Image (cartoon, rainbow, N blue to C red; front, side, top):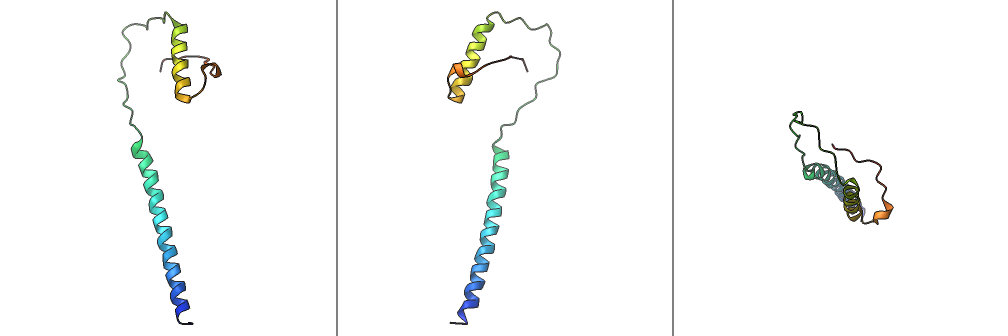
Length: 89
């Protein structure tokens, strides 16, 4: 029995080292996987606008449509949202 104990301890130590190594690999895969899933955004061409943008005629309807889309995406009620400003990016 006394000859088996060092082998059991060695086996457990090797299994622990293998487990830590596997956990590090999984963590690296998770980090790299999230970066791969990110959608790259293309930069818009830098050109000056030919004319100033046209004013928005129905600003209230635009705000209502944006608020409805945001509320639907967030899963909340439209009345829970408060839009302070809208800017063109």
